[in-house]
Length: 258
Ligand SMILES: [Zn+2]
Image 1 (cartoon, rainbow, N blue to C red):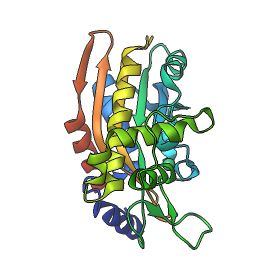
Image 2 (image 1 turned 60 degrees about the vertical axis):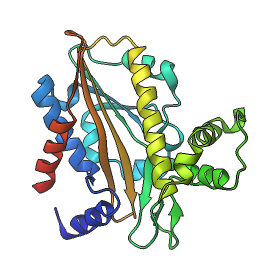
Image 3 (image 1 turned 180 degrees about the vertical axis):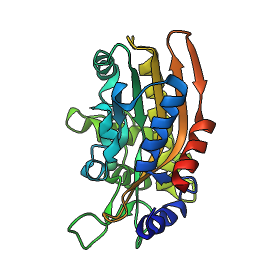
């Protein structure tokens, strides 16, 4: 790791102590899959459920393209708005000897010079919000503007985030950092939805691998980072689901130390 990367990681770890670069997370994933499933990256059909914000495309880890995909399940702040139908479509694209890999995460900006939830984008001189949708929904929660049940077709994704925040109003508003907490609330909702969609979907391959995390987008020269929350491998042949978070975290540390 060069000095710039080390400096960026230490800034992110000031907020998320177990974060690693997303490039590290992909390398560790490939080792996890080789060990547990005896598969190579090009045998994985990959879906992500992350925010449609362009920063996620700009800071996307290059090695992720060694997998097939990505199929995009996510809309604003990573909620899997493609739904059960999106998951079912994706499931139909898997190589028969391969596996499915799903990565899901809400995101949050981390800047050298500003508060959590902001970052400096390419070509800009002022910080901007990230996730912009989460920050806007939080502002409306704080000022009491969210109306229960109000979800419009023209702003369906944003209104859904508002409703989620309203359901968790006291948890978010009483937290030391409401945006950090709102991001955790969003993570938990994404995790529940992905679990429901996986359970409702027929996969023709043997393994379904899921990693859930909180994604941190740094200033444009910092890159992107993730702090893992779940790592799960389901073996559809033996109908067993294993929690492999401890293994994955240890691989993250090994790769990060290289
Ligand atoms: Zn976003």
